[in-house]
Length: 280
Image 1: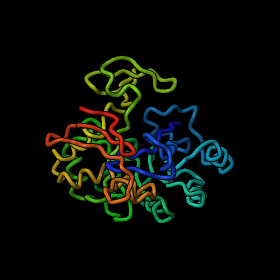
Image 2 (image 1 turned 90 degrees about the horizontal axis):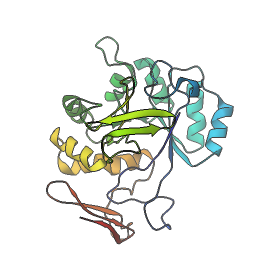
Image 3 (image 1 turned 90 degrees about the vertical axis):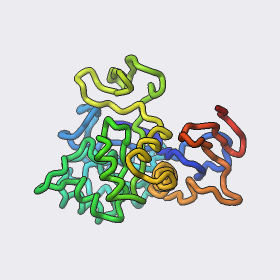
Image 4 (image 1 turned 180 degrees about the horizontal axis):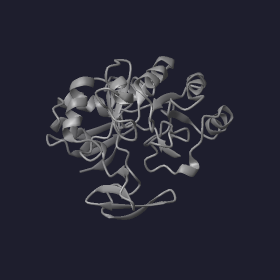
């Protein structure tokens, strides 16, 4: 099971922690434990569980969960979608072997996004579209994508943009060792190796990324997205997933949280709460 902060990289960020000064974690992305044993990726099999309302309740009581990934084909998973919605938690489909029919059943129940599309899920085939095919043709589903040119080929990133512009959300899936260079790191109890900025377990399975959000934006622009819309994929679309519509918007009276970039899309400085925190 993986817990990550649900902290979309925003050009102008806010949330229920507006009164705090400095960067804010908007909540936790609980990636598991109700995942397909066939699509675990780096998640440990021993931590995986079948859908259990009692266990879910304990997990939600443990912290500010804002987003949860589950495999909808598991027995009882669709019932959890309603419970999560009632608790204000966004449901994402991921780490799943679901068919298109099973994915659509989850979307019809209220799941509104897909966790790192194409990765750790049933592959797209012409007679078996799976989660990918179901999500691509539904305008009510946001596609989260790791655009690092490793998890997705650049042509797949281009395809996603052409099909789902306006509902594509950039995510990094970055590990704690991101931007620290090649070496050996820990992901929970798992030893992972970073080589040439690619993160793998010892057995070669991808185990996250070293991607930063500015680089994800640059990669999406290289795949054909206009800059303004690529920035929306990093800012406002992730905010929309969490139900925080003012994330990523520069408006009078709005939160003065701004990432300033130059013409090469390199970060010049970051402004948090109106104060410059990082200068180039």
